[in-house]
Length: 90
Image 1: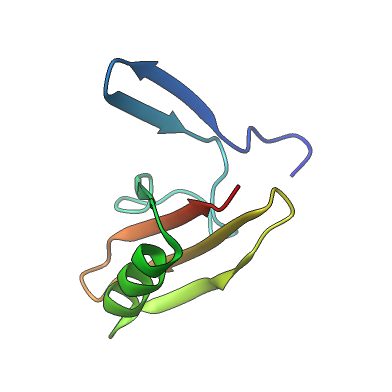
Image 2: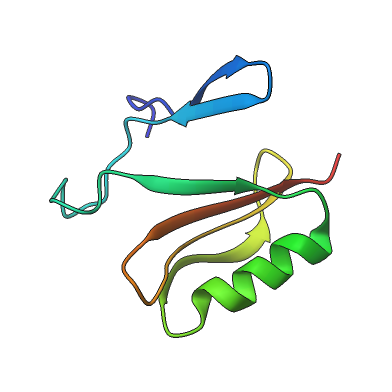
């Protein structure tokens, strides 16, 4: 991961666009080149979103505290949408 950009952010007013050059081990295929990121405002929010989005889906990284101090998870919902959930509890 040292050669990857973990994340970058462009902000203009209330619009936030985040990007990363990280790809799954399987490489990029049609449908996995986009991930939706939810930056949550409370721990309850992230836990609620995780419970609902993971239902019938596949969890790649479970909800846990990360090295950057946030509560984070990664999953694909039952419709094939890739999600990253983040809560900075600082």
